[in-house]
Length: 276
Ligand SMILES: O=C(O)CCC(=O)C(=O)O
Image 1 (tube, protein in one colour):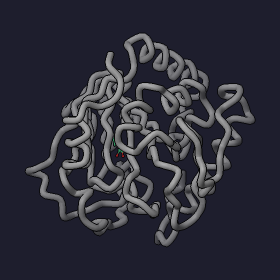
Image 2 (tube, protein in one colour):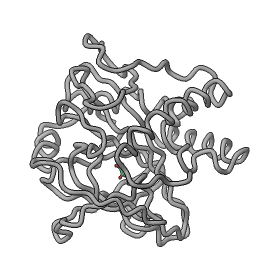
Image 3 (cartoon, helix red, strand yellow):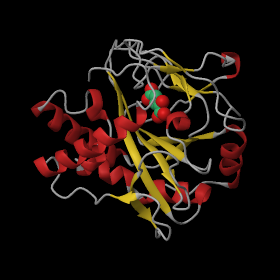
Image 4 (cartoon, helix red, strand yellow):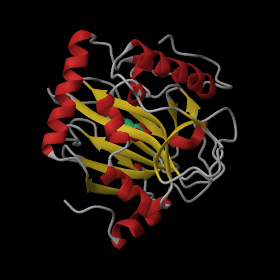
């Protein structure tokens, strides 16, 4: 498996706002992560449900290892440089026959950053196909201003506010097809969505939203980060230590503390709040 991105992949990312597939995890790594995930969900079926789908890397070492994986860092370094911070993460799991979907949105719409250079990595732990609700990207939408989002709070919409962009030309959308262990990288300003899972099998992806250079400031609220590579010479964000004892009550408490503050920021100005 080679590391880093080719010049063509770097060009595609800057032109379209995304690039895939990038090979990052071996089949052994994927199998081990899925086994650990199953173990945790065996003890608590809701371990990654509701708000707990956010920032699981602060509580469980197998997700922490994805965030800090050297092959992911090599690829991200080709896009944002050698100093890399990770902001937050989301476990995007859609059960077989699940109506859950993600409406068209831009990741950065509700977390204003001082520079548009944040990169989301979406790592496939199972195949990601049209049938099971892979992501769809709207090429080039990272190049303009942020698009208008309506808060729908739709029941099956996975997004916090059910925020939705209505003006996407779906005829140009690109399906992000991935095999387990591959990832896509997208500029967190590019518009994307995903449909329901029409298969019997669960579809699982783990997203780091986002990798950023330390020069970035969060314009509202506080950002919580971990250094993935290099150094943070700027100190604009609060540093959170990597998980110690995986799944311990201390680790879960750290995750819950960060999620509570992060949700307050995400819902800032919203008319409603989901009861999760
Ligand atoms: O996993 C999905 O279906 C959607 C993921 C997504 O919207 C994201 O990673 O920003």
